[in-house]
Amino acid sequence: MKLRQITWIAIMVVLMIATGCEVQDAIGKITTTSANESSGAVKPIMSDIINEKGDKIGTATFTQLAKGVQIDVTASGLKPGLHGIHIHETGKCEIPDFKSAGAHFNPTAKQHGYDNPSGEHAGDLSNLVAGTDGKAQAQFVVTTVTLQKDVPNSLLKSDGTALIIHEDPDDMHTDPSGNSGNRIGCAIIQ
Image 1 (cartoon, helix red, strand yellow):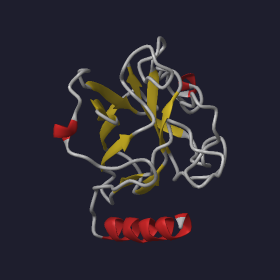
Image 2 (spheres, one colour):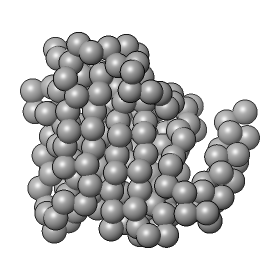
Image 3 (cartoon, one colour):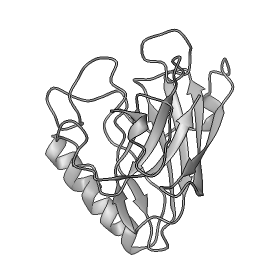
């Protein structure tokens, strides 16, 4: 079943790129939803996304919902195509490589990827699609995380978390990061 879903998604991504569409649907536990489904208990968090030079390339907004967190991403200056995008365990974006953000956010100690029978990390997201103009816009709803403080799956832990955009697509199964290449964008979640 997952192979058929991935095949269908791959076909849709190719069609979206071919038509210049920059809207992304999600796979696995990530679904799209409207903003009016917000639980309202926690204020949304807006973070700048920076590149390896420290220049702002976009924004990420994190909104608590009744069942998870909605993440709205806009970015520019990316190479056209797919990019891995993940939540990482530490809220630091030190240039040029963003290794300060640590590994994927993984409070349940699972392996990486939707296609991994021992996965997925709480911080795993589907690939971000950049159009031929290098711009990307996506919305994810991640049901495995929260903005509520003082719980193990909170993105607002004491040292924060970070959203990382990778150079290459995530293959959705290779541990620890889906062979998604260098870190090229980072946003602090605090």
